[in-house]
Image 1 (cartoon, helix red, strand yellow):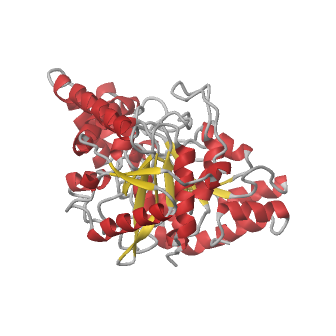
Image 2 (image 1 turned 120 degrees about the horizontal axis):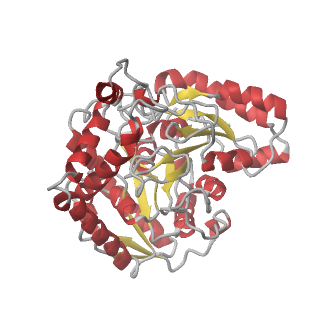
Image 3 (image 1 turned 90 degrees about the horizontal axis):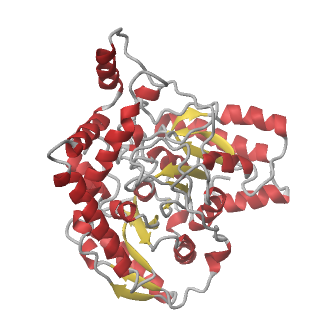
Length: 475
């Protein structure tokens, strides 16, 4: 069953060829065999789900009986949600995030919570209180981050679908490293209610799966307005699945040649060129575009994101729902709680953000980053007057070895050099499998104007009908 798409599994269940219980048990068995090596989950809920399913009988809905893994930064009722931090080690929410409620309403089964970089701060899933997740293609290498657990779980066949969150590439980069498909929707397209905040103007929940068809299926369930989220777009949701086979002829695809530079693995550049040839054969026109301010995106992102993190994480003070250090004096309690229960990367970003927001530096750092952010958004707007989508690399390299970059934050941050600009601009972007280099997957990134997910999924699906990269398996 792990070789079938989620779309096909739903069809089989609806046709009566298998039951929801059969499907759940199969993926539970796969997880038992692979989880000790991969460590994709921090909370395994297959057994709990099996007991619940036994009481309900056959599931109905768009995702009837499909196990879905949920990143541990997304709240799940009566199931631990820790953001993989010692600060929230014992936190059990009393409510579901909106996306989780929609999954349940569609008949999906929550298979568990996946490992992640603490508070989504990282690009390797090494910054987790629960330990390191390993890449199913090569267990000495990182699955990417921060949604590395979700990506690894899908790639290893433990679940057909997963939810991740993307603040600067945290869905797309692990999707690229693990050879799966992942989409960061337009800011506001999917509700953030119940997502533990890292940087509120950048965070977005999105779907992860084997192929564009499965992404369309999952996005159709989680997208849409939510009155509980003030940033949620009050707009109708297209039929993403129906648009997968729209006429492709005449699509204008942009390529930014400055992305194909000496810092990028030559095998990745080759795969991008080959992908453009595939798109041309489908009737697309290739147009060169420029994104002149993209070179400032990493610097602008890490200032803006760290400033928002400094503000958002000030709530973790040991007083309400977090861990608390054992001291009777208030100020030492605050200091010790935060010092003892935040990891090094989280502390680093809090300090960076607090410094950038401090008196005398606010204009020099945060205001300047905000201005650059506006310029990056304008660059995309100008480019999308010429093209419908932009194609390029998701990452400059394939999956790097575990431990290689953990002590070099600048090198780690540069893993997101092609992904952060979409978050700064608020546009949708996705990564699809585009080839292999030395046995490791290569990610191809598609970016589009706001609310162009349907067009992007159509392009990705047509590409996947012509290639088999998304069908390769690590085991």
